[in-house]
Structure formats: structure tokens, C-alpha cells
Amino acid sequence: MKAEIKELQKLKGVGEVLSRRLVEAGCDTFAKIVAAGEDGLKKIQGVNPKLVGAIIAQAVEMAGEILEENHKSKTEKIGELKQRVVCLRCQVQKVAFSVRDRFMDQVRGKNGKKVEQELVKMISTLEMVEAKLDDARMKRAGKVLTKAEKCLGDLTGAGIKNVGRGLKKARKSLKDVYA
Image (cartoon, rainbow, N blue to C red; front, top):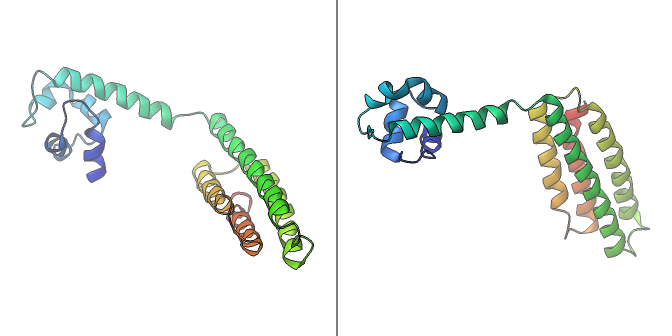
């Protein structure tokens, strides 16, 4: 209920009290405000009759924006997700260069080889994810990509062991898209 109240407060002329009354009257979305019309809004206590037209006009505009956002075509969503995969691939490359530059002497050791293996696995995983995006569930894929982006973002100042762990964690989070 709090989310609906906050959302309705985006309308000019609707404060906390009025938004609460709108929600209580069953007008908890912009579309429902439009459907209620002038007569429906005038029945709600505290609504300024002079502002009813402006409130409805704003609600029409806001409802239209939400519909447009929710009805992006599947190809647009897939394109956005593929772009995020490309960005992830760039992040992985930056991590590889960073590891090479920061840990020059450790790259040839045991931990360096593990990081190298994780980098190769991560790149192949990203290729599999990109290939499966056409069939994937969009919302889930978006969440998984966000998690992987966060894991890779945390690696900028990490030690070589933590870089390997972070890459592994990011790679495993991507499994949900192609598994």
C-alpha cells in the first residue's frame, strides 16, 4: 500500500493524505484514476474539484508511459540484454588486464593459473549466455546479469585469490540463463 501511495504522489496536486484516500477508494494506479473519471474523483473527500481535470490528464500521461515501458518488444529487450553481455565481456577483459598489470610476478604461479582458467571459463560462459538470450526469460536474465555485473565490479581492488573467486561467483550466477 505504501508503494501505491508514493506512486500516486507523483501527480501534481496529490499529497500524502489525498493519495492515501485515493488508494482507500480503490484508485491505486494511474489507470484506475483515469477509469474513475471526474465524477469518481469528485466523490473522494479532499479532492479539489478545480484540479480534477489536471489530475486525470497527468494520470493519463503517467499510465501511458508505464504501458510503453512494460510493452517493449521482445526484440528490444533481447537487444538490451545482449548489450549488457557485451559490457560484461569488456569488464572481464579489464579484469584480465588489471590482473596482468598488478600481479605480474604472481601470474605464473598457482593462483595466476587459476585466475587464467576462470577468465577463459567466464568468456565461454558469456558466449553461451548470449546464444541463449533469445529463449531466456527476460526478467530472470536481467537479474542474473545484474548479479554478475556486481560481482565483476567488486574485483577492481581485490587480491589475486579474490579475483579468481569473484570470477567464479560471477560465472556461476550466469548459469541460470543457459542451464
